[in-house]
Length: 280
Image (cartoon, rainbow, N blue to C red; front, side, top):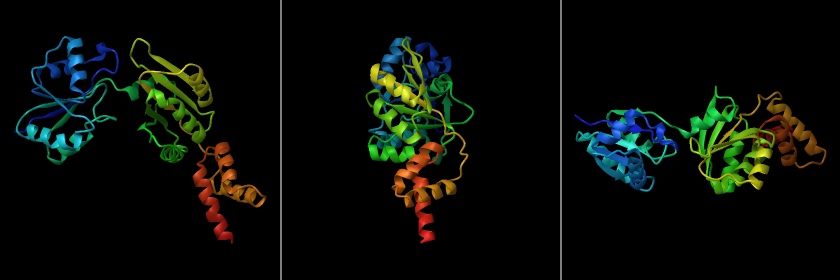
């Protein structure tokens, strides 16, 4: 019989958030795949736990090659525990490839749930929680990031992002440009830790606060979804064409209408181009 793969959530800050089930798994699992074995050993030491099994590294740089090795061990009957530096494996952390491979090989996969930074931030943001989406890290390059944000501009669900502290200002500026500076958001830092802080307000307010008092530490950003659209796309495209014929650049008109009505600039612009082509 094959072994079982268990993905286990570890604390994102406060060590008291570790579950008794995960403690037991850390103590007794014969094989532990850790994102950083040194960090996991530090966690074990802090918890006063001695791992009976072997610690092996499983991170983004060796994930593709290591997956087959781990899967072979499980197929031979070894139970495998997967942990990351903090939070739930496979959520912006290693684990996804392994789960895919295990499902394909008909190997049992289960989860020992626990702390999750996206859910903690969402809960504390004060923004709607009934419908939300997790977007993780945006592309680092400005062009690719702007394109992704334009695709998300009309998203009506609350959106959750990860970002490094040294890129937070650029992130907020880019989101403000794409979504409008009056969109509500929350910058959540050092969640569950001693200096936990939640900054709430419009994107314009958060940008100003970041300039005077930069947020540091682990960052999660929660952004309100777009308001339901009250003016349809065809109407806005027709307005953009009319303004263009009055001497305004089409893209400028599309951008202004998008900001005013919560639509995507790209969609208004393309629809306007299609309308002009039909009329010519």
